Length: 168
Image 1 (cartoon, one colour):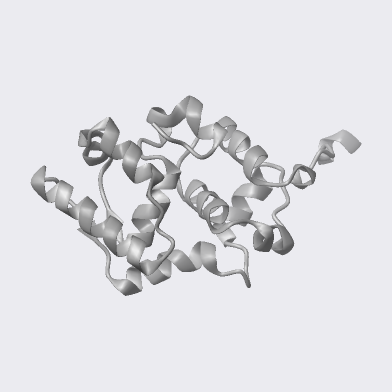
Image 2: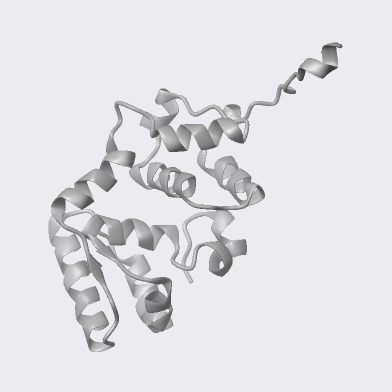
């Protein structure tokens, strides 16, 4: 198992059966697989895929071809996304001109501030992780660990929220 974030290590198989680093690569090449399909791949193959880069177009094409070849041999279901679907999905985390509304809402609900400046300074992978976590159904403590790791320390709001009954 290869994870990129500490918060994934404890709960890897429970909440995210496919590591976020691998999901990021799959989304980059326009391929979706089921968690069962991921688990059917040998540990060596999963390790290999986790270490391969998908930055250049040639890397993406090579990665995609090899993955599809292996999954075809194993007769596993694969969903191929068209270019428009890939572009729409990527816009959520690659668009630097606006913070993803879902990621922003998640941060606020967990007492964090996600500023446009923080969003711009993050890597594509960290923004991707925030977007994916905001779209899932994860326990609050898992999301808190994730935000502690993904956002700058000063993003945590430490002031106690006031309640109207405190003033009555």
